[in-house]
Picture (cartoon, one colour):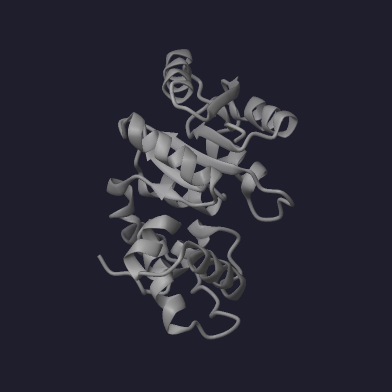
Length: 218
């Protein structure tokens, strides 16, 4: 199988070197470029079309959130998979990164195993958010307020409601299949149906809709 092609963006040379070493030590992952700022990251991403972009938030000039928005945000025809990694777990950063189109949000102290899981999940169309951040997402959404999300285009079925909650809790397709005792292809079908009914572009937006409509409780 073709390796997962990853683009790194962080303004610290040592951090990029460390991330590259971790990722390239894994089978099936290849680092295809590095950038020290958001503008360079966007340019390289458009040139090399990586499977996953791994972006720091705080970079000189264009930050990681704006870079994410330009590559994966609303209105982007062929959005790339972006995982945001940062030292800062501020609620506004989490919310802004996910709204910008990020498929994952990790802290730099998450460890190599979670980093690799996030890369593989993003490449597969799943989303992984650091557990310690996930636990506080509801509070971030509630604090920031904003308009209520639109109701689904069609009522959700009972099974779709179940899948919705598992997606909102950060489960991958395989984990959902095991938890609900259904096939992987059935999970994918339900997720696709949810995206259509909710007008969501990805799993993160499905999860955000579930949080914002009060379906998820801590």
